[in-house]
Image (cartoon, rainbow, N blue to C red; front, side):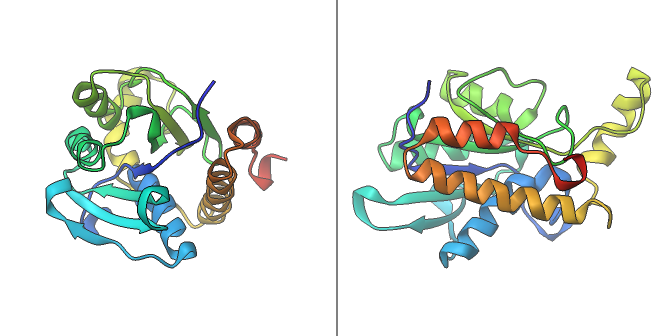
Amino acid sequence: MMSGDFRLLVGLGNPGSKYNGTRHNIGFLALEKLAAEKQVAFRQTKKLHGNLAEIGFGQSSTRILLPTTYMNESGRSIRAALDWFHLGVDQLLVLVDDMDLPLGRIRLRAQGSSGGHNGLRSIIQHLGTQSFCRLRIGIGAPNSSIPAERKEKTIPHVLGTFTSKEVPIVNDVLQEVIEGLNLIEGLDLTQAANRLNSYKPKEDV
């Protein structure tokens, strides 16, 4: 299904304190947590249009990238990083928020369309393919069954912060993501996918 040799992990989000902790930035949150656990620091890297941290050294290192292009231009940063580090698209894993998944659910997928997500749309455009792995982290949808009303609520929803009730679920799922990434790092991708895709937050169990 997928190779587990991911050398570039990319979290999608928007830069700046205004967007810290928002639902749209859950990809940032996951990789910031990974960097903290691995005790590596991000540095601004202008040629990659993002903030970069590295786990390990030399050919075996894994790069963590947080684009600073804003969500709609994420692909520009990823294209630059793949080219700079001489990596293939099969070595890329993108962590992205997904409004169509309930909060606390995760899906590891080898490929797929943008699903209307502007960050994924930009990546597909810059890479010229939909065949890159992505870890979709559910953020839930606005509370409305009326399409027009839901559309109107979408931007405030994704750019809003998590409620006090949601925060424990977010913390749990981010820890699950980190553990899944560690499984992937061990090259057991099938095991990682099975675990992540079947994960349910404690309140759902």
